[in-house]
Image 1 (cartoon, rainbow, N blue to C red):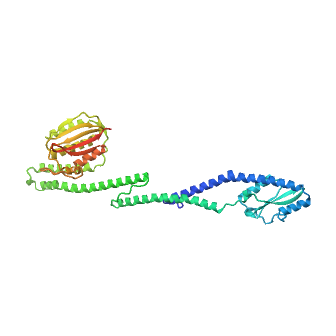
Image 2: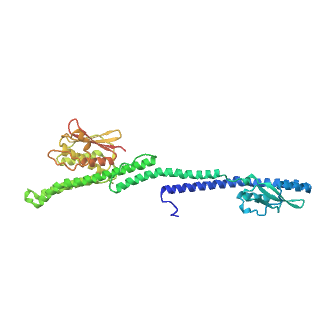
Image 3: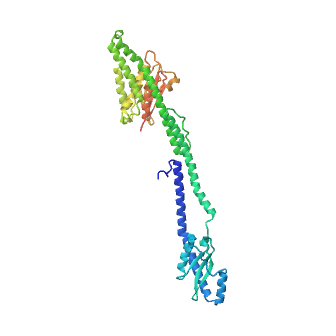
Length: 428
């Protein structure tokens, strides 16, 4: 059975539609013969039997000489049917007619159809005045009708159209599936295909759009991985070289052990930043929390480190967020302000329609306005005199976590000078 069933979707749909059409035709003909044709044949046989009995009664009242002349004229000069009549060549309609006719005639009446299914005569042996006489009568149209070639051609045409329709429909589908398969093969071989055209019915549009988004995400992940490998190699090399020097030539350092610990801590910070950036969507559950309380806690921690953030916190409704993830966001924004802004550090909160808003601000040198859209991209470092450039991942990590919360992060230059990083969380 598996060998008969096509392996392609087109072949399966073609075969299925052809089978459905054949089954529909068989059902139609069955209903036609059972409820229309057979009752017509039975009715015609009953009427024919009634007429035959009437002819027998009319012939019985005629004188023998006249009766003989009438039979000869009616039978076309013949006295009996041909001896080579083969009832097996008759059609189903003819067999049904003869069977029903015999039932309506007197018992023992012989009936013969002359010349096979294409014949136009039916012979009936009647008992007239105790004599058996054959009479030839025309065959009724109900059993003499043949299926015209036009009807046969029409049936084949009806069966062909579903197959043609299936081929056209499946060809449209197969072309798009093959296009997706080629694009997927390109991805498998390490390349990035052109976006698949988004057209056709809504189902194809959905599949094509989803596929394009998947490829774009994979390409972004691959580019990020490449950037991360290059960034790790670049950023770790400097403290790692200094660490080797501290171990190989401790006399070159005033405090070799403290210097080595400092270099290790620097490497640890760099690696942690890359891990945070590479981490997929955080599995930490979203819980209701107080964003102002989290700001107060972090501001107090920075006071212990020698940095004072002025806070202006408006009453906020309870908002749902991931506590550890949101803490990472605020730490990155505040650390960015400490490193690059240095002065005028502040955190403000307020509400807007549908959002809770938090802004981390500074009065530092800021950046050229044209560079603002680039700051949230991974590995974009802000030059700062006297400070290390860092990994360039702080703002990228913050924006990614904010997006996971359904919010957004905006960067803007302040009129007073410096930079403002403003995040908006939706009230759900």
